[in-house]
Length: 51
Picture 1 (tube, rainbow, N blue to C red):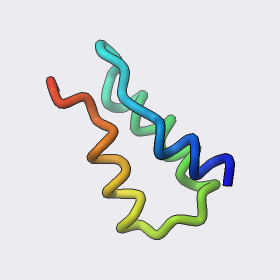
Picture 2 (picture 1 turned 180 degrees about the vertical axis):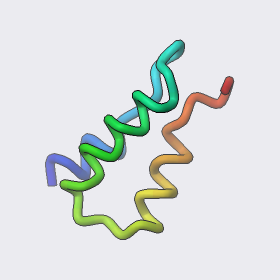
Picture 3 (picture 1 turned 120 degrees about the vertical axis):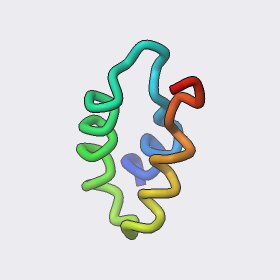
Picture 4 (picture 1 turned 90 degrees about the horizontal axis):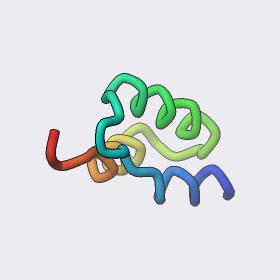
């Protein structure tokens, strides 16, 4: 449950490289038990829109 909460509040920081953010997201995402589709939705919504 803690990992799900973390992934839902995770956001790409301004200036953070996409590869670094993706790795952080994957590390947490692997612990959530969420489906790939749900993880994709979370990932896209957590990206910095300026990129």
